[in-house]
Image (cartoon, rainbow over all chains, first blue to last red; front, side):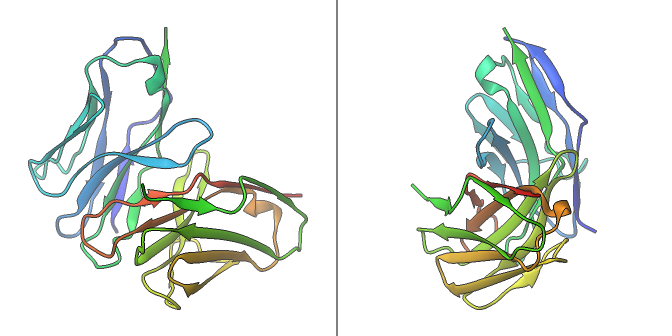
Length: 113
Length: 113
């Protein structure tokens, strides 16, 4: 069935380090892909998205490119800050009118000064 | 800004009680969703609704029911709460269009004792 796989966490980085969180998916057809972020004690909020192959989503210094050939949507940031500490979820929506969202398990990121 | 409001941030209920979790969105979204979030398991879809009075089972509907009498309100019901339903519950809504992202409430932390 349709699913999303993310790298295992938790991830701990020093401030200004480079971040990569891997995400791969399995889906019928061509889904839309998303990264959501959950800061401590809060709900999820959209970080970025891409709706077709080769699209690049970007926001707040984060980027991810929709790679159909490798079925991947890896999240990257060149220089992380303490305020980026959160849980990051890769997700997809199916090409149906319901837009059911399928989430990966989440990757916890801690950035230390 | 889109707002998805969940009626309670924290709830403590006793085993066997009937529990209602309420969710209201203010952007006329067609789709609404209930997820539960557990450590190591990520977000799992309980139920979703794509229209008033319509509902579809998600991946883990057992022990839950839902109600959508008005477009803006989607209620999750635990018919007889059990300790294994202790979790974080997240409500979300989205437009009924392909590739549109979902907006989340802040979550309800339910503890069943």
